[in-house]
Image (spheres, rainbow, N blue to C red):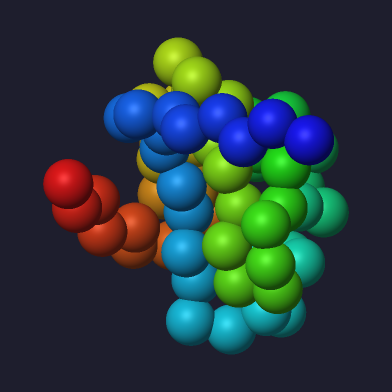
Length: 67
């Protein structure tokens, strides 16, 4: 097994697992998610962070970007 370290990999973290479940049920938002790491964290597909943020805002969420 080989571990690979990635730099500048966008993540989304939510306060409740049900919120990430809801995001993944939305086809446009789910298209921007590469994989789910845990019940509250997912990896955003590289180069799709802006698209995901716009979709989340359209769905009524107020994402906070850090980093």
